[in-house]
Image (cartoon, rainbow, N blue to C red; front, side, top):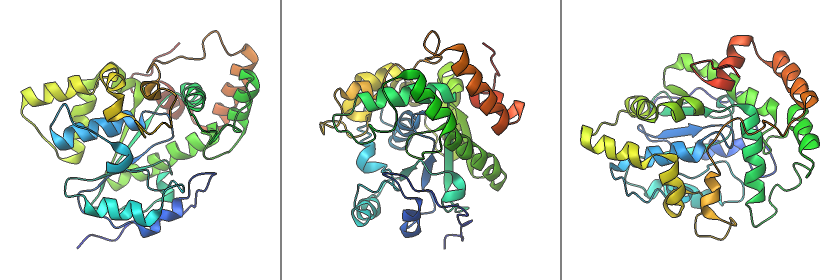
Length: 293
């Protein structure tokens, strides 16, 4: 029998998400829950898990159906649960809710990934531009500086405001002592993909022969996933994106250089100093190597 979970202490709700949907989730002992702020490497991580679970570098990840975003309200909950329950392979499930907003079962594996908050913001803006439907188009105005100030000062859940990223990050720091959460950084994964995949595989208890692992690492590269967006992008082939491959954008960092003003960056710096201790901030921005720029 699966052990009782640590229950949520917060409820998160936005324009298209509701963390209370987790009350209906039916866990299995080996489930993997991917819990991240949006545009932090979520789909990349889910693609890596699809590769590891299948052991096939040519796997059709189809994360929309095989690894669904559980608390998005635009999908019928009963249908999502039925598709999950019909799966016979190792399951993975996605959420953008912080860890204090979802149950944490001791028998499940949880993985979070984080990215420099300003890169998240600019990636999110590109994300909106690539949508064929105006789902969250009212979150930010066209003016870059005005939109950035909304990001820095706001608390909108679906729009990846700075405060919601920090809330998610803090929830992972608080959950780590439970022992079944792996916290990753986008920059670390970019610098050492093989090492990052090895950490993920060890955390979820999956191993493959070295020659297979080498092929999986190659397939997990950002360029390969972008080139094979039909297999790795969310909602690929459904006409939701202007260009499916642009779902992955560039995968680069420091997107704000030459775009944000000194005043914009000063406002961000002041807010970050309010929200995080220096060591926590360094990791959230730059990963384990604490790069300075």
